[in-house]
Image (cartoon, rainbow, N blue to C red; front, side):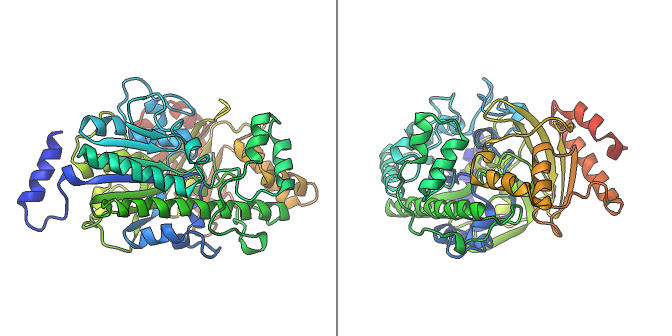
Amino acid sequence: MKSRWILAWLCMAVPGLACMAADHLNVLFITVDDMNRDSVGVYGAMVPDTTPNIDRLASQGRRFEHAHVTVAICQPTRAVWMTGRYPHNSGALGFDEIRAGVPTLPETLRRNGFYTGILGKTDHVVPSRKNAFEYRRQREEMLYGRSADLYGRFVAEFLRHAKRSDRPFFLMVNTADPHRPFDTLTPAAQRTLIEVEPATSEKKAWYSREFPAPSRIYQPDEIVVPGFLPDLPEIREEIAMYYSSVRRADDVVGRVLDALKAAGFADNTLVMLKSDHGIAVPFAKTNVWRHSTLTPWIVRWPGVIKPGIHETEHLVAGVDFAPTILEILGIDAMQGMDGRSFLPVLQGRKQDGREFVYTQINTLVTGASYTMRSIQGKRFGLIWNAWSDGATVFSNESMKGLTWNAMVSAAESDPTVAARVQHFQYRVPLEFYDYAQDPDALDNRIHDPQARETIQALALRLGEFMRSTSDFALPAYERGAGEILR
């Protein structure tokens, strides 16, 4: 608390200092669900007109080119955001509760006088901490997280409460788009998805539900299939539905920002927008390839961040979110955080030690364990798959859509697709990718003698990171990557 008053004093006492008194700065954190970074227009989307509202937000602040989440799974990544800790230090390895005694961001902010609120994903954001948010709306209240009108209405309601409370606020707004089921499911697609997943009455109702229409609907011939997937008709159909869902998520973002402006809070509110991980198809969500964890991260801070800044130098990660918010607000850091604030970067200064990020997977929603660790830089990425033994078969939620079924069918006659199916299911213990030459991670160069020196340096750095954070997987890593580490 003491640091908050110091910051407030500095803001008043030092002429020209680019900051606001801590008592008057609010925070709006907007998250979109399962959205690839390359689906966003300002990040180079090859499909036109996907995200006009997110693009506008980026033009008003700073967007990070190299921003990752720490875990490409919805609940554990949010636990990282809310604690500033890696999963092995918070207890939230998968869909687990954060350990008792581990402090969380919303609870800390509330103790420091903030009015806290959350819209959507309440079952995934510190669900065991019932008093973390004073105001909450379940996703069901926003037509399962897909109604821009209802998001706008509830944001306006929260802001009225905040104004009456005469306290700064922290509001986390979580859309359910573009999480599957994607928009505009055809009857054939509905039947296929119901057959793929357990045919419970709840699942049938979910996939046949009519959600609000997005402001634009994409057709299969308008889209570009991600390069890590084969371009098959069924995949093209599912990706088109995904892009319609991206547009609906953007509709929500626009409505939320309009409500903030209408309530008179736009000029004294820090806005951050981020996706929780990549798209829910094979080779993205629930893995540690670059397109699993590389997501949009946009920050608008009126009076501090110049509009239209494209940050290309520093790497930031989800574990850095809570430390950054707390330092911005002048609130003492929570005990035990692994991440560190990137406030200097937001202020336009260079910050050392931001050449790499560390990502991981532990347990899935099914409870199955698939331990993975990865180190990512601007160009290179090294992956360790602890579970890969030639016999264990990987399985996750992203295989339950049209895309995986299409790949399995095509693999019967297409050797290239068959190799991709084989790799996804069984993997290999170590993977190394040159993302500058191979952005879709199609060519594992782990045995390339010309890359040996780079691979060894990354392997050593990954081991050092695991040791410094007391990662339980370190002994197995040292055994599994022994040849490279020597």
